[in-house]
Length: 137
Image 1 (cartoon, rainbow, N blue to C red):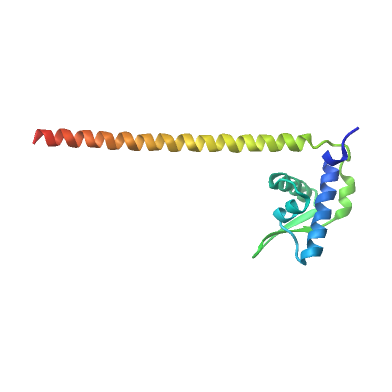
Image 2: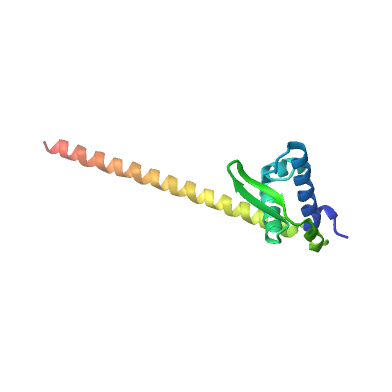
């Protein structure tokens, strides 16, 4: 039997409940970061769940002068979510995203190191030519 905590259905209910609790306690709609802190999940996972809920039109994200705030649009659509879908897809997508980010960071570091070496080689070449010209005089 599937663990209820790992289904999108449970995660979506938890997210919507956290949005309600946050808004009740703070008298303002929450951001994704606020909701993630309330239910103690990673920000990446929170954004992933929020995007899914936005696609299904359960919640809306509204950009304002104080950042992007979340609003519950149609909580009844939560019941249309599959109840036994494991979160493994979520974890797999999250791991894939994190590995992509890590690969991108490594690529950037490699590029920066190459640029640094090119710059060093260029200065060494310029210094060598300068010395040769000084020796000619």
